[in-house]
Image (cartoon, rainbow, N blue to C red; front, side):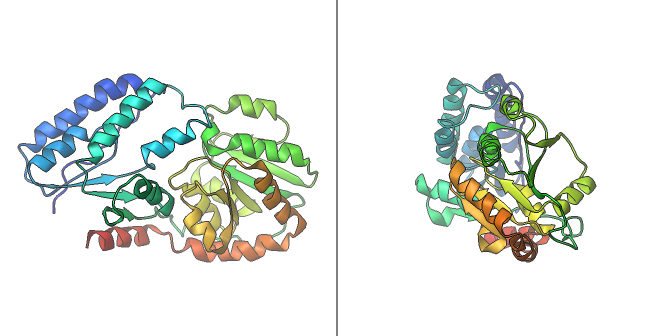
Length: 319
């Protein structure tokens, strides 16, 4: 089958873009479909309602490539963490209504993880319509470290956008309350809405705003433990990148990459649970041999999450 519609829009002014650009783009694609020969309409969320309505009128198959989780799960998390910059409750309700209507015209859904898939099934989507294909890494770039336990201080690493949703409040609070002299925390990633949190705990971490991939590999390899206490991530590529470099991970139940971690490359903890996070941090502090044992397991597990395996999974689901 041929592919007609595959689109995604990014915006800093979310509310106005949803009501203007998203809608205009969706309508433009739907109109173009009337003149094209195709079999499958494949789209992301937000700008696919008219696209999918037109496809179903023409008797075609519609596939949602879901980069996130079900919108109701996101709404639940927004009761715990602040809305992203530029988003309002009104715009959330508007967007979610569009997503709900579009789902009524959706035949199949691709998700990035079992967590994302479960959120769709829990909201009433039939299980036989929801498939999972985990994103991949380049194993030639993210290569395993050659030595473990070489740091004088136990080094914990977080890589991701500096935002509430990634669980930075829990992470910074945990290290602040533990007050461990033989531990250091390194944060890598662009600043978003967590500047106030980071200012509150200034002095308890090292912050690096940006690294090229080649430099990032070195940070993954030098770290003893990767920590990612996110409130909501449909996948979280950095988790598997760290594991591929031989670094065990601590993630939450709402991190899609737990699919990899729970196979033995680290620990999965509840969301918004600072005590659970502190316990796992102390686990590594009190037994440094765990870094190598779990790190070696993490390396093996990460090899299951390559781009070639991702493509194979897509083909298997198509069949």
